[in-house]
Image 1: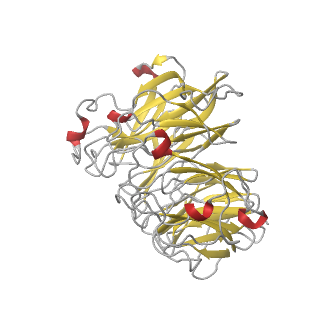
Image 2: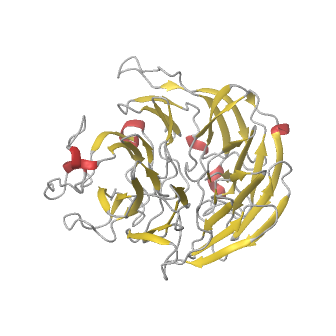
Image 3: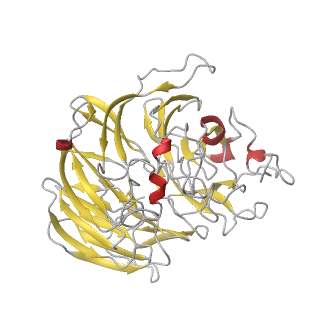
Length: 479
């Protein structure tokens, strides 16, 4: 949530073209944060505005744009899972952000399938080992067989290198829209599985499903799992993505489970590989666990479904390590839980069951929060469902200032170039000066709701609304 970019605009107006470098049309719903790499921009959306007349109807889409001018280079178009809307929520598209390394793009699509894509699409040929993209891009019936003719591949299509189906191969139960941000560590991919409750919201259909998995980034082979049996204790779904940091010389992977507990694992050894395909995935070694909300209900948790006074807690955002401390925001589930949430700061040193004294401070935020904390210059920024942006002292947990934003925040704030950028579901976009005293630099009304965190790259600020991706830059913006 922090960028080192400089020279970014502090105000803009897309309607008037003020500081607007270019704008590109998306679908009708876009919940994915854009990712910029290698001259390309990758962003998830839906197929509400089809770019290929052969691929009609509700589908998940990943678009790849040229960073220079916003022209579409290629797209991944994935059919919906039709068996149950709670597997793949209608119109939600591809919600997971991409992770890019070199010419490889790693993504969890709307079907809960981990894909490794060629960043160049099919323009340089159909690379393998996976070569059956045409069938994968064709809608399927309940028996899994293609429905209708398989459409011939074209230059606008994505190139899948390998895939791993979390449902079929890891036994997870998808809920709503898959949202996994993949962490790369060496040759390994760490990702949350998105497993959760069924359509009643009161039952875990796959109690043995993993919550965190590790794959080989070169082959997609399943290497390891959390192995903790978290699934039966998931109140709603597994939302939070893993992060990694070095604590006192020790590498740790931080992961917030769907049970409201924060876990730290030791990463797999750099050269780890499964002996053979028949062997079981390794269990990650648990370094410690810390209960984010120790007084919350721990038994028969689904009877608290819809209870806004008492319920387990949930964590949507990512744990953030900074200056030896770990910051995490969470509390009652936004849709089904209690109206109570916090930003908490903990000491991530220890082993086993961390003591309550590892909590350095906690700050109450309004009712619910989905945000990942943004931390810089001794300040923490986080937004909540009460439409407030909070600026909190990173050392003491004391609030410096807050601002009513006018709309709910489904994303996170971005700190860049001495500014704090944040958008709302009402379409308001705010720019603040980074500091202990509140200073509003600008406010703009964009063309629709904002679910994505803004992104800065090469002197340009990218802001995605539900229907458009905007590139804003000063005259010195690059490239």
